Length: 424
Ligand code: PHE
Image 1: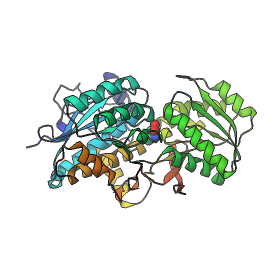
Image 2: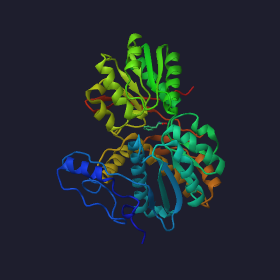
Image 3: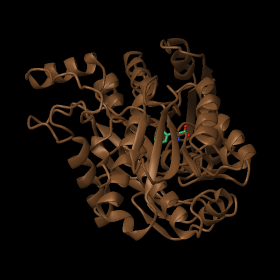
Image 4: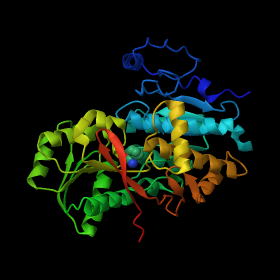
């Protein structure tokens, strides 16, 4: 019999610090440190929602999932630790859930999958080594990852060169899929997302003067700043300041003061969640109370935890809303919550769709280890009903999808609007 995914040693407990945090949150004794080979999740209740409603998250580590003995090898590379570990963790959890569901359905009579999950620590320098291992040692048929554009931009040329299909579930920078015909994404691009943010700012917030602040060393942020600039200008708005900040910068006072001088109606801040809460909080302290708009990088409960009430009057574009009442979304939200004891972020939703699209492609070919055949099958993806919308891969290996705009209100995400893609 196949081992259950949840019993694989790859999914082991987080650090002692995390266990301690769990203890503090729930007031119960710490779970015993896991032994190797024992079940696998560090949480108060083995992946179930804790009864007091506090979400003490489980933590996933790199390793093997699914059918290790006979499965078709599929690689994944995400930052499971490091600066944006929440993104990698959520993506990995959703992929594991998707595989568990397929396994429970006996792989629907198709080939089983062996997922080899690697942690790149959110560092570009780890990507080459990891892909080399996945491609040459594990002989994966395809790779899911990265989620952050800066890392996908490092991984894509390698996969292209090696002739291994790479599917990024959530890298939105347009350049990623331009690296070659083996590189796919199943999310919208920053052109679409930049347009969604600009349209929302211009029409819903009635903003005419926008100031943009962004981390200058992040490809995602730089690209999205440019795409917002183009779209906001097209709509008739004016960019009164576009200002990058430096690597690892935590104090945004100079940039915020410069922005304030320009009297903008809106701040556009395309960064990741680890900066956006800080920035919002520093903006409010300096009396900048105007709406702040961000992109999908804002999606994490940590934004509100860092930024607290400063994140009121903040909005961001995202891939889906967990409040969407469609049965496919609600069923995903329910199974994810049951499995992991927390609500799925957009990152989880995109990864869930991405891995299911890849497995569908692997299943549709006569030799599931044939990388070129899998590439062709991915390219032919059409009308896939996903949690993040209906996904059709176009000739540039991108997906055209609507974006949702969410508002942060007292730490809760509320749905505001859906923006259809700007297709000429
Ligand atoms: N779109 C971001 C990037 O390309 C990553 C991201 C996806 C962040 C989804 C949050 C949610 O870098």
